[in-house]
Length: 179
Image 1 (cartoon, rainbow, N blue to C red):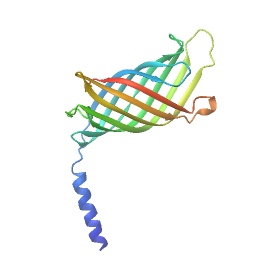
Image 2: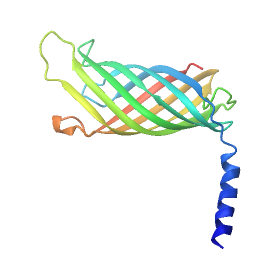
Image 3: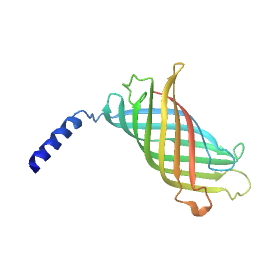
Image 4: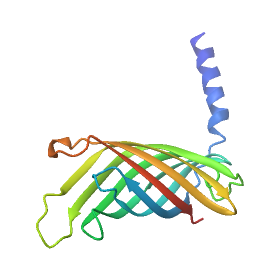
């Protein structure tokens, strides 16, 4: 009886696994972001490259990538913000792969984030923060007025809170799909 159950399970999995395609493709986006990291709202430029390493269907993939951010806080060029998250994401619908025809889609993912703020001013500043920790990431992708864009939100739990940094960090982004 155990052999029959094992056979049924393996047979069922074989059908599911046969539809998976290990096809590697590259996608990327660029735009702007903002975060609650300091009392001054930091803003900056974002670049989001990703490698789709597994095509689940014609309209869904698994990918590994980043949402790099480089910005300023506290006025013009007073402090520099660098954001380097690494994420694994499930992509669906629009822009999930180069072959997707969908007009709407999105993504959800998990990863690890590292952020750093450094003073750029002439006077020494006490503002020097490093944030790192696990993160969740989600967003939507759509074509509106023939422009392919992405709205993104990410939440990072700070494991480095002994420096008086915020316990959690929220990042919001507006990016445009480049391919």
